[in-house]
Image (cartoon, rainbow, N blue to C red):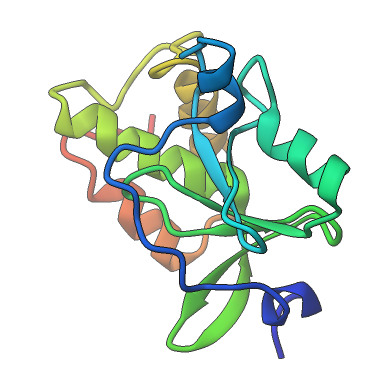
Length: 165
C-alpha cells in the first residue's frame, strides 16, 4: 500500500523539460525561484515554498490537485499536499521519506560537485535559498542521537570531505 492514496490517482508520465521554469514567475518576468515542482495531475510547473512566489502551493490551493514532484536535478521525491507526506518510488512501491533530508542531500551533492566543502557554516544558504548550513547541523544532531537510518548515514558519510563533528 502506498504511503497515501493520492499517489495512485495522479499521472507519472510527464516528459522531462530540459530547462523548466516556474510558469507564473515567467509570466511576471521573475526568475527568483529556489526550486521547481510539477503538478502530477496537470503538469503545471511552479516554484517551491522557499521561493517568493510559492506558485506550486498556490496552484494546489486553486486547483485542489493533490501532488507535486520535484524537478530539482538529483532529487526524485513527490509531495502530497493533502496528506502532507513526502514519498519516493522504490522498486514499484511508494514509501514515505523525510523531505528535509531528501532535499538537503540533493543540494549538498550539488554543492560538493561544484567544488564546495560539505562542512559549511550554520548560516550557509545554498543556491537561491536552501539552508544548507542548518541541514548540516541537523544531520550531525540526528547522527549523534541515532536518528539516521543506515542508508542516510552512509549517503552523508560518502560525501567527499564530510566530517560528523
